[in-house]
Length: 215
Image 1 (cartoon, rainbow, N blue to C red):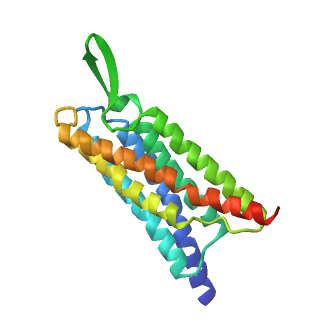
Image 2 (image 1 turned 60 degrees about the vertical axis):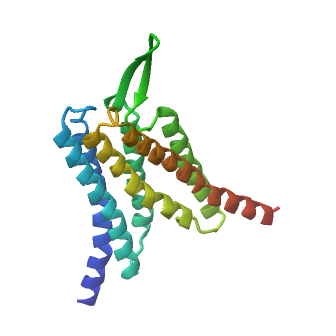
Image 3 (image 1 turned 30 degrees about the vertical axis):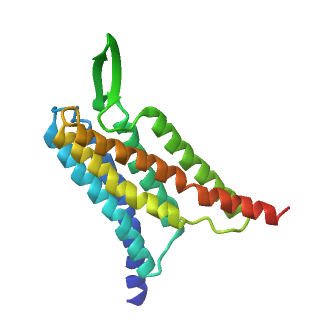
């Protein structure tokens, strides 16, 4: 009986982790039905709810795994993978044509993003994730822990808050018509970029420290 209970406790966090990837898939599929500024507003709002639900599962599975002391190799691999699919996929969508705004200024066609997220920002964020993943792999191969650092957790918490908020503002407040809304969106977008880049610094300094000890 105790063995069955322990086995069940081990499976529940992993099942919640895998549920997140399914919710993420539904989020991207439904978000595809929205086109700024007013096409498929209902789909846009459903997508917001799905993102929030997916983000909640990230905290629930980690909390249960720690509470029941059932942290597994599967969870250590799949949890960050599911997070990256959800977050990086959202950044890519936000920098895509469904959120683009065309305007003419002095005869020149300018393309801006209603989400405040531009392709170059996505490149920076993907580069950060690739670099951190590489550093963690090197550290673990050298016998050092490569788990999520506090800065990475802060980054994930802020992303889980800021991304659905940006989508909420874009879908329901039309930043093209309200400068204050566009300003808020741009602030959130730049904070996302800055916090994401900043959260990678502890991994870099940790690697440098380990390399110095091994010299």
